[in-house]
Image: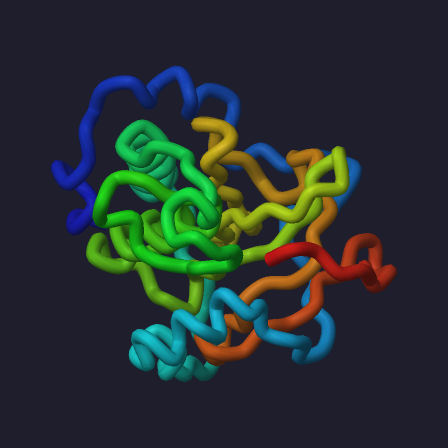
Length: 204
């Protein structure tokens, strides 16, 4: 945990931590239940072709990160910092086409690009790639969206560009569809809620 100390800013996050530490909603498990291997989003497929190393990580029996106040502070800090640093702009306006997943090195990006940057920063901070999973959800209005899931021994936490609050997946208002497989960064698995498979396509 010492690797995380002093890495991130101390300010603007204390209020976000209030009430989060080891809390678990009673309505659902703090852990997502995965299903079978499923299709890879086209944006991720193209990213893997462009940056092959993104999709070559294999993990066996990788344990979730051990949750602690230091880890919660780290992931909350990264979520806040990236949300503030990146200006939301859609792919059409940036690249002239849809579904381009890219690191937002020019300071602009859409939801997947926020996720990639948060994932990159947390990997540099020492978290395992097996515990930093790009996740596709459906918002209440039916629109597709991407968030970052951080797997911990206390549950699966969500980092989202639409809120600075880090929360357990079961404490969001999203419908979870699929995410990267923890055992292979180039593969994806379906997600289940209350053991009922969630079906349906979204724009990834």
